[in-house]
Length: 504
Ligand SMILES: [Cu+2]
Image (cartoon, rainbow, N blue to C red):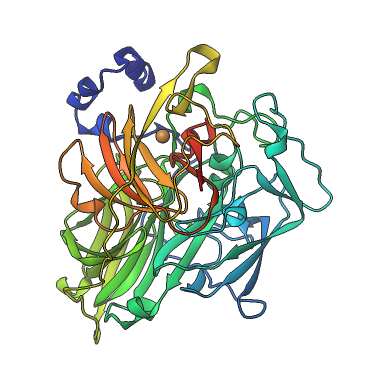
């Protein structure tokens, strides 16, 4: 018996041989972690909707990162680390151009950094991994400073004010921890939530609204016998030694699928259209979402907001960090139908996500217009750069890198100019969902061919699969300063697959 990891190792760079072994293996982006306790019954708990954050005064919010015990698996409790002690954290309902300050207070035993994913954030509010908040009264000393320049670290005692001007289109954004070397375990424990940016253009469309406009955060977790989260951290205190057990270098995939923090939930729906803001908040797992017994997703938005026109999908493949804003019309089903959203890439429990129970007829004045938004013309690229995402090094130095370089704060791999666009060519040896901070992009091509239907629109995260060449057109707007691009497989990110770029 040879482990899958050993098998991949034997193949070395022969990616086409991997693809030839069947879609199952070629599509899996991490290593399965099995729970130590019986799994909960599927479709037995209602879908939670995270509470909406309430400002302390107009434009100002305060949120506290703290541990809490919550009931995820019925009959047991799980200690989470959550924004305001909940998982997902509160949803921030914000408006385009409405400058917002979020004070994040850290009461956890570890440092944190909060990144607003998809935000056009000033550099000092972007959640740089070494720009950390440490709980009041706690000390923190970067332990592995041998390869990290200490001058790159900033510590805020107690709390930090993150300033978000939100000069950007309406979109489904999310916020999550981004601490140097420890992002994966800290997000796994619950440090993630939604930010919904709204604007007049989106509001004016007749898309489903109110209780039929729902954030849907999908992620996977594994559980210990006592109900606590299971995770293969080398140092469960998350204070000293980063990283995961050797077998999980490819990424950690749990065997319980959570939607908005609940295992395989159900939602009772009207026979009407719903807007589902799908987010893959998993560390490593990719999903291919389908509706059974049949049905279609009408995509109206991507990572960075409205598409120019709707795109109809039978299935949506969503990589970690990506968002798909879709309309599902439940009036297409007889009353009483149970519509299951499944994951065609998962086996066993991971093959199911959640269930919609079509309960009653209802009025529905929503519609999906044929034109959704105008997409402004983009200037021609002034440069082309190549970024290769690959596992490099031998023995103890084995890590995930970009252009052969492990992440080094203060050493930018690129210096694009504000106001320009560039073509970035992304290549990979494995599944690497590539996320670029600050700058939105459009997918130009995959392996020299047109992009996939799921690549449409303005994006900030793109699913780069083994041995693919993905060209994206990146628009550098916003602010000068230091930003990041990285793999959004969070275990890869923590193992150095991240690079700084400096906007000049
Ligand atoms: Cu990766």
